[in-house]
Length: 185
Image (cartoon, rainbow, N blue to C red; front, side, top):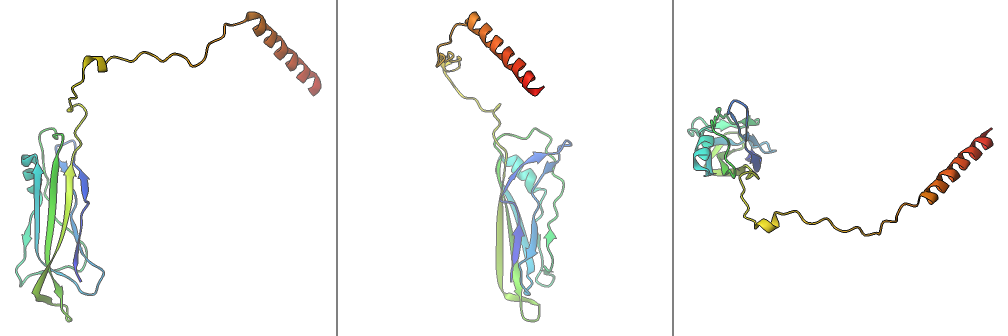
């Protein structure tokens, strides 16, 4: 019936400690059907900014062309091969690249052979990105906007402490404690 591409639609680019980029995985699989696809071509492209990083990511993925006599019969999910991708610099802020995968295939006929009269395509895209870090963002502000605001005034008027009233409360609390002890005995 067809070929389906399993690919995240958004992927935050990260690096391992050894400058190895962690890249999205691409998997192709047949859709739920008795009709198995015969893959003739897999095109993988990466574009975006910065261009040198997009080119480096592109180098990790390989496009493949099969001849019509040696098509890939897709009966189980297949993970596409990717090579290690190293980036020896800090990852730049604001990375915005698009990984596009296109699979060209032929459906099977009644006997399971490829129907070469009509090719079909399946396409998927993944946005590879990095947030712009706060440290890299400069916001111009007037000096008066950076000064702290005065503390708000209290919403209530504090009462002066009355020592006589405070002592009376302590005596009443003490009497309550004594009466509670007498009741418990």
